[in-house]
Length: 473
Image (cartoon, rainbow, N blue to C red):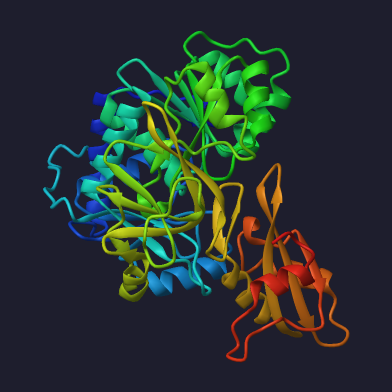
């Protein structure tokens, strides 16, 4: 764990003692079994221990982005009604450990496997993101599958820098390494430009990152001294390009593999195997326009369906659906959205793609697009409707529509069109929007249009709108 410019290591024994201390402090705030604790975590040891301490007491922890504007946090808190709010956000309590909080009398609370453990925000259709509930059994199943797939074991380190409010950071870096008895080195997100130095000095077995970070690493690591221990690099959260795969293999001399999953499916559903032969690896990662997202990990089933739920033939595009122990319990406080997300026990991802069978290996999956109105920017997701609603709430804005366009660095860019009253300046709208939306949800381009194409019932015509905004459909 990077604290300032210092590395603070903890053994498993020390981590357990510290976790009990934090649990004792949380207990003084009334945290116990089934308590909903909202935590706005940063990548630092106290926040990791706060999360683990709350789980020890049988509470469930809702992760909030500490970079969210105050107004967005207020809307979320009002909707989710946490019992305790911790972190550097408006109205939050700062957890302070006293001298007597040794945690000696803290006993882990037994919970049912179906009991919520963690909650993560995901994209929403209104001003409040949906919160995905992940049960203890699902967290454990995902950690077991991740460990098996990546062959984690004691002595092997996973290095990552994604923010802790992100599902990938918690499960890939923390939960999986705790399960495997391996090592976790969690950097601050602002350590990206020095990532190559940390790789050289910490000598990890695996590095977890996002495509934009992989491209940045290729630029900053000009004379790579790659540790022998580094086996592979895992990329997720947004599409990986074939050119990044090729450049990584040539420049770094290691494979970068792509994983795919959503908060609703507990981080990863598919990942490229780490033991493919060179010919197969090249065929699935550099020959297609978009590299394969791999095959289903242990304990997960994936199928490609048509709109009626029937499986489509190999090579045909359909919606990816997922089933297994890793699925979410549901959306917090939203049973209607939960029901709509499932069909006969299968979670509908909203992502479009196809499958190809590799001899002796089974089905490999490829993403081609998305059926849901979601933007994924630098690994973070936000609903287009949330951005549109925020725009319409601004003075002088009559109507608004958003679309996305591909971006090599960020995965996607957001383009917004607004219908405004006379005299309204779009530059000022962006400034006002920053108080309502996180930085990754702000449009990269804002244009004025004469009208938003809609159906007679008022539904936005997304294809026609994309043409007006001059983005690819």
